[in-house]
Image (tube, rainbow, N blue to C red):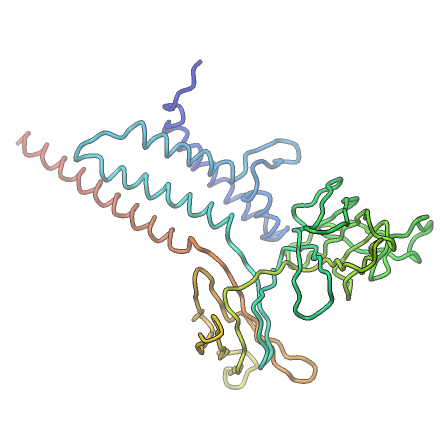
Length: 375
């Protein structure tokens, strides 16, 4: 049997995709009750396939959305005919295609991070809540150039090397959630203990948590080109970067930390204010007065408060929360997102709504015309 573009334009395929997305939505909602929303998203919605009932491979939402996109494109190409009756249907297809493309673009390019500032403090870097990286630098200073590799890109057996570096690394173990083990906790300590800033000699994987923010990854690396270490263990428990000495002298520093994103601005917290509902300790309102610097001579003052974020060039800064330290110093916490396709869903919804309205009016006019002819 020959497969043509008409098979991909089948209305039966459309109905099946929509039906299966409904099933995944219901299944994922039930699953998150016991396992958390993060694991439900990873299993049902961010996957191409998943094992249903423990052993049956079933299509995930990513695969179904891709098939639905091909189905809409095929339907658009097959059923398009020039004429006054088609614009409404074509606009509906274009709007739905835009919505799927917008979701994929946001998935690929979107960023979620946080910035925490005390009064008088400023920075131009946001820290991811869920992603981790291995940083590599030549010096130890508060402000320094560094290179980084995403932990999510590393697999057991993979080798990598930083630019202009004599060191080579090979992944021996890597886990998204694990804990370090000291020599005292092992009955038989390893013959060659890896170097670790936290004193660990091995790592042990742990079950995934319900929220990705609680994950503490760990990685064991084999090192080539360093005189003081053949293996490294890097964990979030490391309080300082691991120093590696080179054969020809000098040193390099590596560290496992939450991923950093450079912001298109420098933000400085001038003042943080908060108020409570009368007679309670429930926050009624909290806001931050910040100075935004876009260059040496360009700056402006901005107020970021609850439900009123600050947006700039695809980046959005929300007043997320605050924290009070032991010495009563207040820290303002901002949620930072980058979504260049933020307006695409609005455009897609508008185009689809316009197409539905046009098609509805055309159908009503055609029915009215038929009644008049019969009369």
